[in-house]
Image (spheres, rainbow, N blue to C red):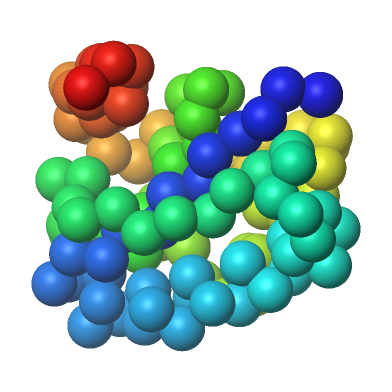
Length: 110
């Protein structure tokens, strides 16, 4: 399995919606499965630019962009990360150019 990075937005709008707590919950959930972070690392990201659709989470290099994430979605997201199907109900919300900009930023070697 390829190592993945999960980024949880910590921009102002997402933080107001609870992204800090959601980050901790997701990190703890995935830590049970991968305590040494060999397969997945969960990190905070300053802002994805999809503020009105937050809380936003991305999974790299899969290029999965989840929006309107709530604590009750975390089990489904974790199942996807562990090898299941992407959570379709949380995808395709932000404009494609917003997603593409994020993929370009994450793909940048700097």
